[in-house]
Length: 326
Ligand code: FAD
Image (cartoon, rainbow, N blue to C red):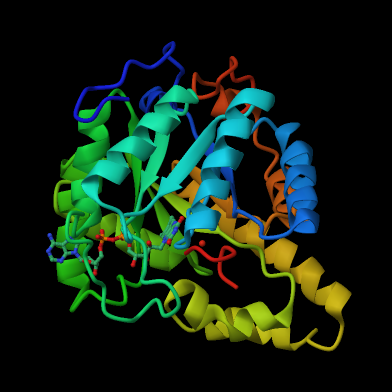
């Protein structure tokens, strides 16, 4: 794509925006770019296993280092070309000039990828280190949203944080900036993972109270081992809810029982969210299919709920952390 010139996308592939606008619900799975050949085999196995569920989209996180980034672009391109799935490319501003960002958007367009999740990204190594803007780059994800919008007919997602972003001085400021990036052109948002429905509902109410109706898709990661609970604050930004932790403590000595409870709890959480009108569920998979697939299958999502034009094909149905991303 020439710099600054809106890209011409090959043909109009339906987007997440189309599906949500038609009142459908979105069910999606998130992967990260693996570092090894064995990791790559695992990833493609998981992608193929989840493909049969015909999710609305699958997303691939974007890392901080150059080689991880190339892997993200390569995986997204391969999903677009070799599978029936709709890929959503995560995309960050870390260490990129505006020129590079535009070039990357052009690569996605050339591969027929029309769905991009625009997040600012964290400093490589220490996510809480000072965020240094590239001298010719952007400062906030809001600017990324505008940049992608100007580049062509893309559907753009953004990140939302039920417990506020750790850098935000207050919940109010966090909500205000979130609404600002929605108004900059975001079509939908995906949350950071969380483990209690109320935390999502409070975020949605805060955003709605500011007159913003951008759909916010909750992100779920089924608990499959006790170590997830220990890392909850690092993963989600808040301690694991004590009432849920107590249920897991009862079976802590039995890894199989922990996993079973994790699937049960994941399904309960999803059901409650869907009953409360959430526009779908985004599952973090850690590049494995089984836990997310088991939770999804327990939801018994009827095909009429998810039918819609979001796929690259007619749609009959229907982030240690994220590898090195989220
Ligand atoms: P921003 O929206 O830019 O916000 C960053 C901080 O600045 C917040 O505190 C915000 O309140 C504040 N802010 C925003 N606008 C303004 C303004 N105008 N003035 C003052 N303050 C402002 N990371 C990766 O590296 N790769 C990934 O693939 C990835 N995928 C993710 C997917 C999801 C669904 C989520 C929830 C997170 C993901 N992350 C990923 C992590 C994300 O990059 C970090 O959490 C990052 O620190 C914040 O990104 P953001 O887009 O919310 O940033």
